[in-house]
Length: 471
Image 1 (cartoon, rainbow, N blue to C red):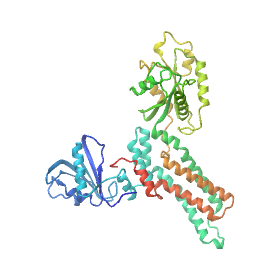
Image 2 (image 1 turned 90 degrees about the vertical axis):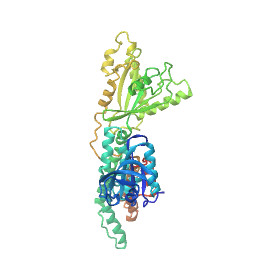
Image 3 (image 1 turned 30 degrees about the vertical axis):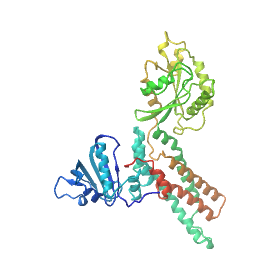
Image 4 (image 1 turned 180 degrees about the horizontal axis):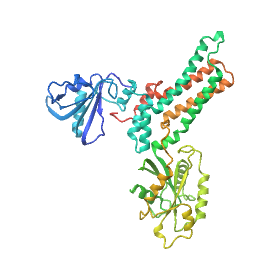
């Protein structure tokens, strides 16, 4: 359950730990007077409780027992604060001791420690932004690449929620006419033109379907483009992963089958976040555990947007590569995690060039396949792989601002789509108005869930529990 929103709350707003400075955020009706009781301004005559909004005041903070620190107090008067309430932010030195003592002072004066995401929850409840914008705040904090940042920023500014509100408003107009018909059911009057309603529903259905389809792209931008590193045992997949990440992330051994489970790590290259997946070597299994590992490898191949196929250039021929690729494609499923319409990208990595005494027999064929020749062991030509990865996804551009990246939004849109399909079916089958209204209301309900026009304490609790304390 949500705690009392009338309380004054406080929390550390900067990352925990020691640093140059730290910021303690305080919000609520008593925040200014509470701060005033422990703050002594350098300038005489200044009173925090009477200070103008967006002003900063230098002074000391402490109790009768002595000064704790020299601080800056920033004042934000309602409704011109992040939460829409009276608020102050105390900038102090970054000692963990000082941070803790200031928070203790605030609590002693009557504040309570904020729950995770409670500042942003109050901003939502006070109408500073809608629910999808509030969720975008968390995405913006977690953004690790330019495109994930751009996507979160656009959604925080209301680009996506504006589209949802527009769809809902168009449906509300017709719903009001249909509801009116129910009030005059005995007169058998028809206020809503059924042909126009059907046309509208088909248009809305198509737009919602487009948003649903964008989730695979939005999810990739948000969580990282999945890159599966595959190949036969002992061709250097784990060595390659370690070389790309520049750390010993995967176990390397000359014994075939060492990697029996997938190993994942994420790095940012250019404007994109790539999630690398080292997989078990593909061969006929020699044990139960290895069988599970190979099964997971095929699952990752199915999910990956880019596949790095690694082979030992000193022992592998082109016909063998083609046979392997044909076998891989048998295991690919329709469960894509990349942008709809974007094909899987295969990048061929000819590894172990350090073992070559002369050019391989099929060198010209390898060149035609656009292979990258490397020695993962010696870290030779590794820099060519990031360049190839960026080239492979250069068409991923954040051109459409209406992109779904949140699982909750995705599920709500699917439910809204099902309800709209049900109304369309009902219109075609001449169902009574009262039955049509049920499905229209359901569609409106699910669209309203996204922006928070329709919500519950349970939904809000689940969403904001995933925020950090202080935001």
